Image: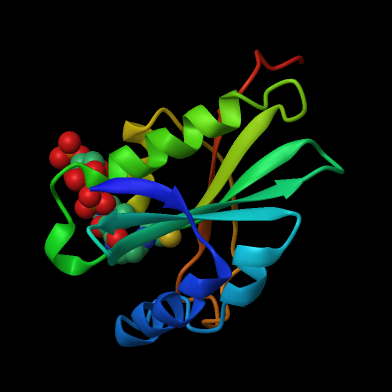
Length: 151
Ligand SMILES: CC(C)(COP(=O)(O)OP(=O)(O)OC[C@H]1O[C@@H](n2cnc3c(N)ncnc32)[C@H](O)[C@@H]1OP(=O)(O)O)[C@@H](O)C(=O)NCCC(=O)NCCS
């Protein structure tokens, strides 16, 4: 299994996986793959796409945002998620001359923040207006400094 950058020819499959798993069905996957401000990466087994993740680059405040981390259900709980996050962290660190911080959002209900903590992130805030669910779940913001933070 290996990680590679997504191409436009992957778009149909990514949309199909998103729909099948009801995961981020409203996201503009075409934009995620082709925008100048983002990159999408795929976890691939042979020719099969088994998971995906991505980065969104915010030049205005020199941060990089984790787009999503998704694995097919049968692959979960085996360390592959951490493998994907570590890949993103190392890609972000290589651009630490331009970007100062990697940020990620995690729903408070579901415990995903624990997953980000395992990868070296810390909680840096929350947003109770982030998700369109009438406030049932709030977003926890996690961050990982790419360069030592200046106070
Ligand atoms: C979230 C996801 C990518 C994690 O991948 P994974 O391969 O299952 O996670 P790992 O096996 O690498 O787990 C690493 C650590 O994070 C923890 N962790 C992983 N998923 C977790 C979750 N949903 N809740 C709490 N902790 C979690 C694990 O317990 C593990 O800690 P441990 O070593 O103490 O046991 C995967 O479960 C997934 O695709 N979920 C559906 C999509 C999703 O919710 N994505 C996150 C929001 S974008």
